Image (cartoon, rainbow, N blue to C red; front, top):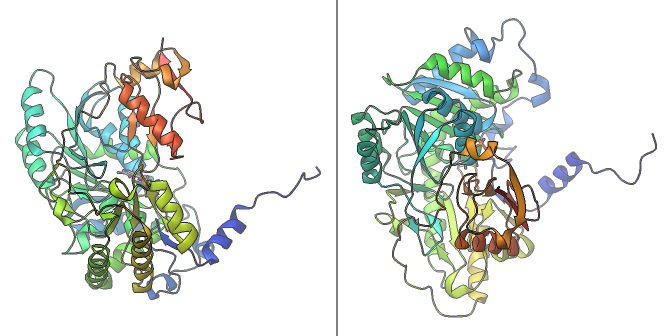
Length: 488
Ligand SMILES: Cc1ncc(COP(=O)(O)O)c(C=O)c1O
């Protein structure tokens, strides 16, 4: 057949981007440092890409090489069990929730969860009791979860008991909740605690980073290696806490088979093993040096007068128990008058720096131990230059932290809402209706609206504002976000 016009070539475009001088403040955590000793030692992926042939075990029935590798990984982490994941934290979250809560059961869930947790709840027909994160009003960001909120809910759940609690810590922006406190409460109430630590895979390897959820006593911990450590995209881990009796590992294994590819990539699994091997050895020392580099960058960014760095002074308010210094969140809101997308565009266009994401008023840069001093210096210089050109008053004083009345109210479980007929209405006239679909900003992937929630004027206004700022809205059938599916 005759070809019409030039065909897009993904690999060519990738080559072009990866060969350019654009510096990646985004995932994956290896930052494509192919000449670094650690990455240079890894074989060419094509050269080791096999399938389940004799002698190489099978991830879905591991009893040889892969079992030994995962047992060794568990010993590195001090976990009862560690499972390699080749479909990202997404499949770990799906499997953990489905394994921990029986069909039709009830889960206590962080309303700030990644969409995979909602999908798990919908697939398993779960009822959700939401615990709402605090809000860092001055950054327009989610704060932490308060242990006392979870305790109150578990006490009140006596009549309809919850079978598991699911929280996210750290958030996409590096905000850490009091996981130890929450784990202790869950243990007292006999409820298994699942922690989505997708953004905290580096925590176990650095003393200057927050404590890992595994060390804090969680029953299941899910980590994306690819986000903050040198590992291929999609590689992740699921740990079961040592001595955790509350998890049925047979059910967990079953659901990992359901949600993972039946052809798990040996390249990804070898990458996972190599990443852990490195982190357990030289990586620990590198994390200390990286902490110095990150601290230096943060010290430089404190000189900004209009833009504002999310910094450790937020600890202690809005449920923030600790902050990951590797996430560089810079607010462009307030006096500076810039939007997040505008700041991201200035960084891209004038400084050739690509951010991980931007929110309405802020940008987030992911930095990892693979970032060079020069790379971090470029980010510092760029932000200080942009800041110097901004006019207006100095950074406003931080506003108080509010409670989380910012989320729409759920009136139907997700699976019921998804099963009902819906019709499309203009977004502008949707307030007061029950949503039949998700609305997410991706990243970070936390639904703004979940099926079964009542759309408020505030929510509709927020979606409209995101649309106008060209933020990446996902989940809506209408990709232009002009209309939304509501229940009839
Ligand atoms: C908090 C959180 N959990 C889970 C995930 C899913 O992780 P993965 O992309 O490794 O599937 C993400 C992805 O961004 C996330 O931000």
